[in-house]
Image (tube, rainbow, N blue to C red; front, side, top):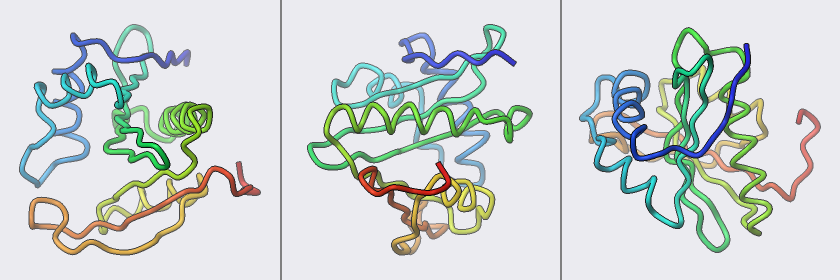
Length: 156
């Protein structure tokens, strides 16, 4: 499978938003709508990265960059493409961009009940740093995970 990673364009906003609703925000109020995604595509401190295979959008990641830390807002891969390295490729691309920009700490929130996502981030070197009660729409807790890119990880 040939996967291409590239910066999202405004025309990708609706697809990214729909994938967020189906893959990430299921069972929660839908907050990552097409206009919100489009704002992040245009925002100078945000990166919306998409993964395409055979011309189809199969995954995306949205990260906001600050001076000393970055926040990975969303990461999704279409279910039929999960487990093939697409999510890891998206995260590693964003990590490299952060390091080049001099931003070395990345934060992410993960649904507390999403064991698969928690294991995914753990494999990539992210450590659980706390819990945010009712973080997702007042319905579900989040686990906060962090990675310091300056710390060497054996399993990279």
